Length: 174
Image (cartoon, rainbow, N blue to C red):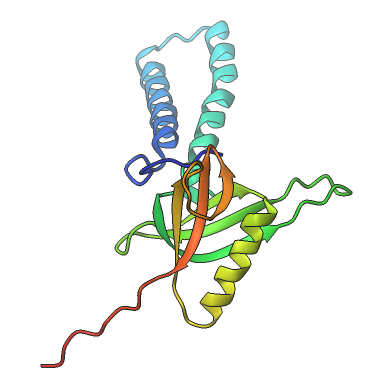
């Protein structure tokens, strides 16, 4: 999985396109049925064969809106809310993955992402979750894989690192 520069603007792009196409095709199909008073048997069979494809596109379009992890790119900086690690298990043929629940910006809704499992990322997440249990907010930062910054490789030539967020200061008293 590759991580890019700013996925917030492109969030759910192709899923929204699939949803739009599926609803548009269904609408056009209904309009056609209303205006075509004499629908032949061949037309009814073709229509019956077309509907499962529409439902297939619709199902794929709904995947992102149901809260399932996104296959979009991680934002370059985000607040880590939570993480879940599924370790690889060769006996059960489980490849393993890491689910992250992150908030891209302070005013945005959280989003779930999935990354392939790596031991280094698992270790970094364990440290980050320990810091979170002690009340320290964790910030995730993406770096180019060739940079000198330390971090776990997450594929696509990118590294992911977690740091303590700067403590917020209270506003001055009046």
